[in-house]
Image 1 (spheres, rainbow, N blue to C red):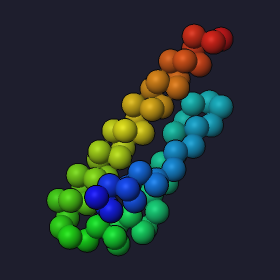
Image 2: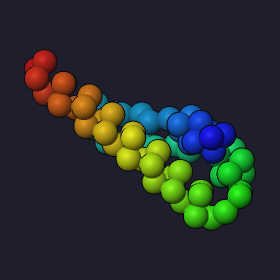
Image 3: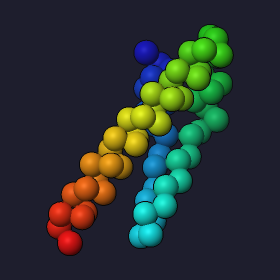
Image 4: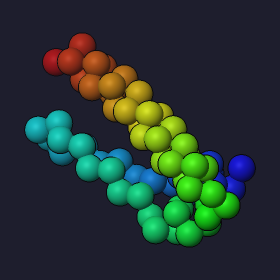
Length: 65
């Protein structure tokens, strides 16, 4: 559970042009050293969650324009 919470601590910033930069703190990796598979899974699930959030935000931005 800790590794999931720390992976959610990754920050996503959107520039005006719509470019994405995803910054994942090194603490995320060091706290989930149980196995490489767990790290990879948490990393990917975090990216998927961020991608879904960004997609929703972008579609809302298009509607409001």
